View 1 (cartoon, one colour):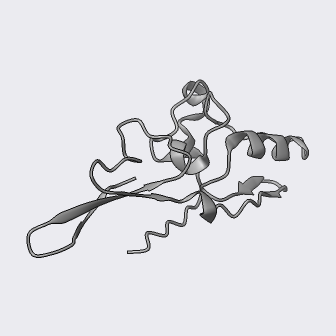
View 2 (spheres, one colour):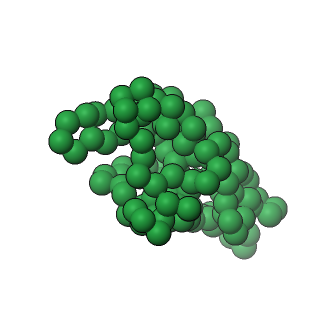
View 3 (cartoon, one colour):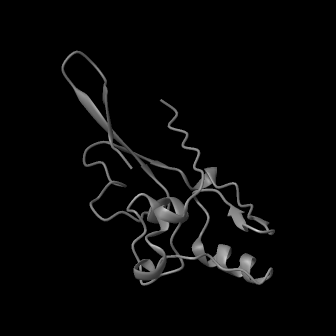
Length: 122
């Protein structure tokens, strides 16, 4: 998650940060003296599980890992790698690679992402 600096006049700049549930290791979800945009309302809140030879799940970046785990378990599936604390969002943990207790076996979460669509709005 990158911070954007916007020019607001001839000699001033304004820092803008996007914030979901607030998970960030180095303060990316904060903007001292700037604007923090609450992105939680953009959560699609839909989890699609696809079975078959190569099962996968399609989710929004604002979805909580606990919801994904609960939904995939209904199909006898589970993510290969998830965060150690399940009440964090997919987007938040992926923005930091998603290193967790399962990383030694299946790699970090980001290594298990097949496709990602990023909408910046800029």
